[in-house]
Image 1 (cartoon, one colour):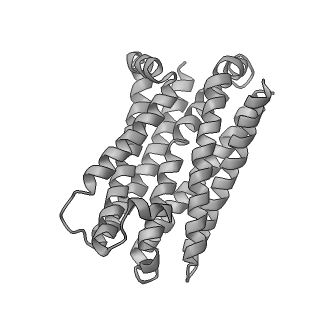
Image 2: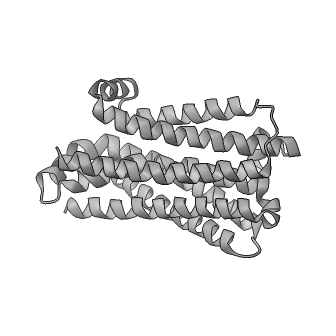
Length: 151
Length: 116
């Protein structure tokens, strides 16, 4: 693997973790009685930018290297399901994250100052950020399984 | 803020942007679910995506962004006023759609993995 691809993979992992952590911050922020809106909007931006850049760097690694070099090794190894189940699921579910983060950011930006008075909408958005967080955790763990199967 | 350049923050625009975002994101998620399953079952679609976008995954990503932009843009022209109850219902529908799509994609690839 070239240095560039190695860097792309590291950026993908680190930015993915930054994105998931930022969504966790938003989720727990929603759960508090009084939200600190400006911090949550900043976290929303960090999550969105992180996921988009992680999407691009991971996508480049996946398209340029994974398919020809990693996939055949995993499929021929002891854990072929790591690719057929976890890579396949991860690569498609990852596409959800930027959209969901954008939705949360838009809701925070346009409705954030009204959410403390609208409990039902706040609860729905809390659930949306919780779902986005757990989706991010699943994708992270899938990445760990895929890396393990390649050893 | 960057977002101010694209979206005006008056009361009517707030509702329009919120609804347009929910619709755009919901349709994109649904589109990704359908494309993911159908492209595995219909090889011609996967080949077309690969030929058109260099990789089927890139194709799904690019097309889902296009779907979001089209539905976001179309829905901002929607004139009917939406109630807060309607807004809550729309977010809850998106929540259900995301869980349903994620579980279905996982189960689909478990099934495919067992039968390949």
